[in-house]
Image (cartoon, rainbow, N blue to C red; front, side, top):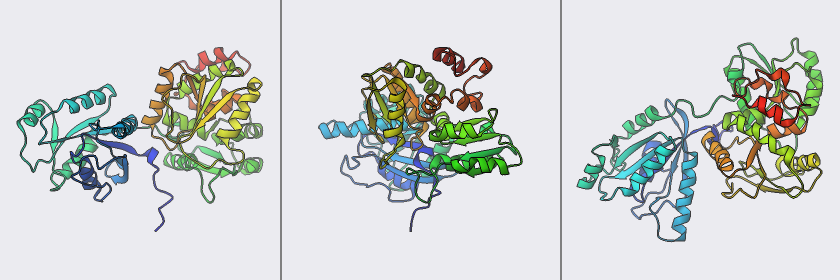
Amino acid sequence: MAKSKTRTIRGDRLHIGFFGKRNVGKSSLINAVSGQQAAIVSHVPGTTTDPVYKTMELAPLGPVVLIDTAGLDDSSDTLGQLRKEKTRRILEKTDLALLVVDSTETDFSFEESLLVQFQESNLPYSIILNKTDMPMTGTAQSWLADKTYLAVSATKGKGIGELKKQITEIAPEEWEPPFVKDLLQPGDLVLLVVPIDLGAPKGRLIMPQVKALRDILDADAIPVMCKDRELPTTLEKLKAQPDLVITDSQVFPQVAADLPKDTPLTSFSILSARQKGDLAELVAGLQVVQELKPGDRVLIAESCSHHPTADDIGRIKIPRWLNQHIGGGLEIDVVPGHDFPKDLVSYKLVVHCGACTLNRKEMIGRINRVKEQGVAITNYGVLISFLKSLFPRALEPLQGQINFARQSAVSQNMPLRSRMAKLTEI
């Protein structure tokens, strides 16, 4: 049977990571919690070589993804180091960590190092003592003496109900902000302008459009949708002006030209940037755009891997618009999916997509990695609004996320640094 196209994508789910040494029973616990044979179980240490993702509904949290990681204590060879690196990457996207320990263990120095990482990352976590159907060592008893932990047995099914309850109790109340719901009042009329181009999936809306629709309905507001070329006709047929218009960044100029100047306007990509990352930081990244010169390197980062189209937004349009803006000569690289590089110091600017397939924790991690290396970062929608002279209008509806108390003094004609100083005041 085909999978439902209405299922929650992984990037919008609470990410629950199972961490620990090899062969402590992480895979068995994943299977017990999910009620399915989601991960391969074996007595051979190191059976899980790559992270395994299992999506499920966990009441009352809702949609979650359980992540089975490779044992971080594998130091045998180069392959073991690669496995550990993959697991560390999982830590960057984990919203809640479960440290699985073995009741028969005699050395807990490794577990102590993991706890330090959790605490330094401000990551909610719980210690899960597995294999309690076997005799506990004195070392385990001593190590656990001053700690709060939950005793389970994955093979016997003991404590699995309590484990699910524990996950619910320590889970963050909100792991990402709403998409647009908090900007709306009941009865607001929201117009979604959706271009249907070569990059649009056949027979479906793209995920940010779906999320916007659902959030509008949840806010008891009224959604209306049209294609960009039908916008003038749609406006004529509406009895009232929209309270908010959301469009694709690529058609900002056309949509803005068809709207009254006082109609609030933003983009799906800007809303996604707000939900998934640090919008103020992405706006601040625009300071570097004016400083770009021929020979500077720019990285275009995509959160998903997709087949590029003839006029792909990330690979064709944005590079073209950036080069037009500075007069050409930029060196532009594109990285798809999870191939986000560690070393970024050679780049002047990182331009990230809306990150709809990433969870907020991973996107914040990417932003922080860029900042730590002294590189600027912005987002497709924020950048396009600036390049197409729709800045700061496209950010005006997001009051409260960026301070627009002095918005009347901000204009497209002001020096960029003056505008940024006003727009990024928190």
